[in-house]
Length: 278
Image (cartoon, rainbow, N blue to C red; front, side):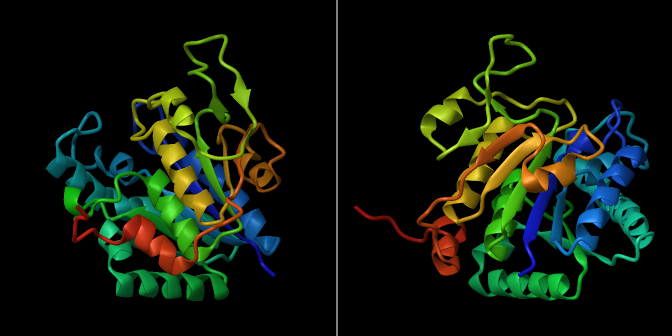
């Protein structure tokens, strides 16, 4: 049976120091996706980077901070970003498919089921779904919030065999390794605990939107749904290839032995609460 792997690539793994898209980094990532696809894996990519791709085209000198400006930048950048992925993958004859989601797509049971079915068809037809939050229309009430969480929701929806979070650090540490020389690397995590959240550091990059805390939250959702999670650095040319077998340095979060079925996942993580128990 073909294995399904969900990769999440953060903004820092796709951009230059000035915040704009780095085509060399994108080519390196798509080349590895193509190799895995050719080996028979079913691949899903959850990508950040639409704002980074678009803000300079609108004349902003640096990444904007106002919501409307970020949404406008995303509207321009989304097409540019998917074009980069599409052109790179087509060199190997691989079809890519853009999928834009918001929290509403997970909260509504019918849309949740439809999203699952559409993604299954794409994978069966050997396309690579490229997923991002629909930043242009997403307001606070319907935002997933970050692509770490979005990737966990997609991995859970598909009952993926593995979720890989690619970032600018090589896994989870007892402290932020860039500021604390005594920080120790944690190779395997049995379960996500409150102690881990207390230990997690903030965002590692000024261009990124989430730090290790959001990755722990994503790992919690995915592992409770039966999906193991591997966090590793995207810096190596073979990072994605090695992540599949966890042969590169990183942190593996083991899947929960008593995972939730799809309906219970929906009720636990996505369904809106409409009542209060007193």
